Length: 220
Image: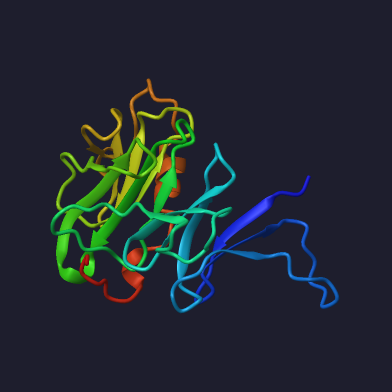
C-alpha cells in the first residue's frame, strides 16, 4: 500500500510525496513543500507528521528552528501565519546546525530533543522533553556528566527507558530522564530489562553528529 514520505533536503526545505511516485517527465511532480523559508528554500532536517492529525507537520531547520506547520493553512512560509515556533526559549541556549528531535511513539503529545554546544566549547548536556506538543520544554539532563549530547532515543517498548549518545559514550535513564547511568561503563543492563544493550547502543548512536556542520548562531 502506498504511503507518504517526509524528508528534509539541502536548500529545498522539507518535502512530502507518495511512495509510489515515478520519475517521468510527462507526469507532474507529486512532491510538495512542507514549508519554505523567506528565500523560498531552506536547509531542513528531521521532518515528522503529527500522528494524530495529518494537517500538521513538525520540522526543523538551521540552528534549532523547530516548527509546526498547518499544511492546510494560508501560507507555507516558515514563520508565517500557518506555522508555530516550538524552539525552547530558555536563557543562554545556543543551538547546533542540526537539532535532532522525535515524537514519542507512546504519546504523540510528547517530543524529545537534544543539541550540542561543541563548537562553542560548551560541554554541558542539553536534553529536553515537551509533553504539550512542543509549546513548553523542560530539561531532563539531570545527572548527565559534562559531555556534549548528540542524540536521544526512546525505547520502543517502555517510555521510561531513554538513551543518549554523547561524545564519550551512551547513557541510559530508567525513569524518563530523572537520572542517568552509563551504558559504556557497565556494558550491560540488569536481567530485568527487556532491552538488548548492544542493539540499543547502536540505535542511540545511529543519527549524524551535529558537530559536522557549520558554527551555530546565538539564539535571537
